[in-house]
Length: 461
Image (tube, rainbow, N blue to C red; front, side, top):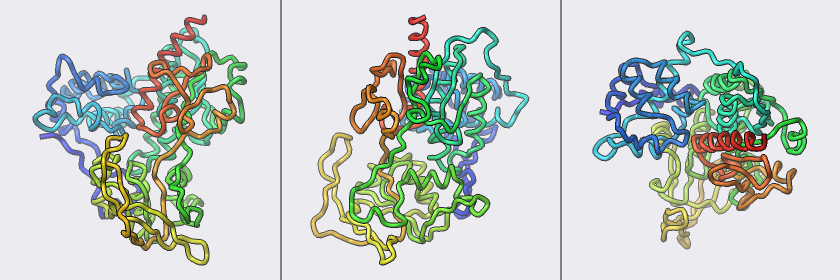
């Protein structure tokens, strides 16, 4: 039987921001690792964007060699404790596990988290990481310290390059620190992983906005031979309906940034409160929407609603996040489309008008298209609305570099394999080149870019 991590009790966890999932015990991890068939042609590896040798690290866990397992993961993955928590393994490596044909797949994600956490809790078992002693190769710049940037920087540093990350915010980590709540990804875990990247010899310069503080041309003038742009997708999208300018209407980006990076959840210890009422509607059904809904509960909301125009089957969020939210008391208004946010005489939200929907034929995403039902209007009694319907790349850097080719919704156009742009020596990856996606897909792009940058710099000499 597949091992399952224990969770905090729902009644307790909605009153704190501590980790919900508590991890596997050593016994659970070893027993789960022994379920792995150690396939000669391991299909699970094909589902891993960062190419971890999954059977090898699992075998080490089965043998009780936990530190060795962690080191084997780090051969390919610079951020294992992060991936073990937020990577959607169920649609990637675990989906391709041979066991999945007849029973539950091996819990690869939980095992990765176990190995990484075991090492973090055993300082003597952590192999020291230092900058390479050999003469440093050329200088490479990475713009953005999210998962794509950290991965690319770490891989380039391991190859011997002198790497500098430029981060616009005061804290490194990108979406890992501003977008994912503490109860899913503790900030101390992110900091430990960032420190590991630094231990490889990577310099991180914060509070520097490329496109403003320095242009791309100025980076090249400073001696950087190649630049990897990994600034994510931080521009929120809205619905374009009346009432979105009312007080207590938030984009999910602002809502989560204030809670996570500005530590609103620790008010009054940190003087950065966020104003929510007692009844909160979150529009959308991706991981960001569920993160927002679950944060609202922890901030004291009496009722929190997910408002989604399709059914639960079409929700893009991870199944475990949907289940956790339901356990915590989040309510679902499905097949519902907001059409207007209603305000009171002081300019605050007091309700939201919606239309009932039905599902029609499939659209380009493969999901059935929601179709409005005429005359089905209804109102929700809410005093806060969070819009979580997606994000687009911030246009600042592309506007400051007009010669850089961009495509639909402002994404930077890149070669699929090399992540190269139309500008010589400039590469891009992660959400800035794809639109909002997953942490692990961004990391995969960072690895691809590092390989391409290494080849490029060696070719130009």
